[in-house]
Each structure stands twice: as C-alpha cells, then as structure tokens.
Image (cartoon, rainbow, N blue to C red):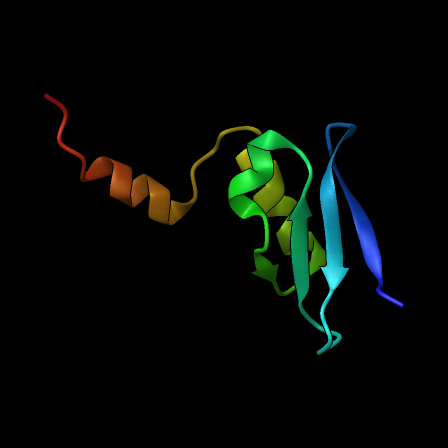
Length: 75
C-alpha cells in the first residue's frame, strides 16, 4: 500500500506527498494548476515539500529562479 499525505496551502488542497520506495523521499503529485511545475518533484521531507509548495502557490520564486530572473535583459 502506498503511503501519502495531503498537502494543503491556506486550506486549499494542492496535491499529495507520496512516500517513495526508499521510505525517505517524497514525490509530489500536484492537483492544483499553480503547482503543476512541481508535479513529480522529489523532496527529502514533508516539511521541505510543503515549504516549496507554499512558495509556488504564493508565486515566490526559488533562489535559482530569482538569480536567473536577475540576469534577464529587459528592453
């Protein structure tokens, strides 16, 4: 049987965290359009998964996205 946890952000169901066969990592199954970019992501903990999901849900870029954005040329 697959073990999973509901992932909610601000009371909105956004997906599920599914325990992987190694019994450590979690895969994210996105159900909300704002979280589609995270679908299939593997994270090391439920806390990390919820943190990343909340950032995506609220439109906060990751550090890598912020750096890439600062390198863009605006014309």
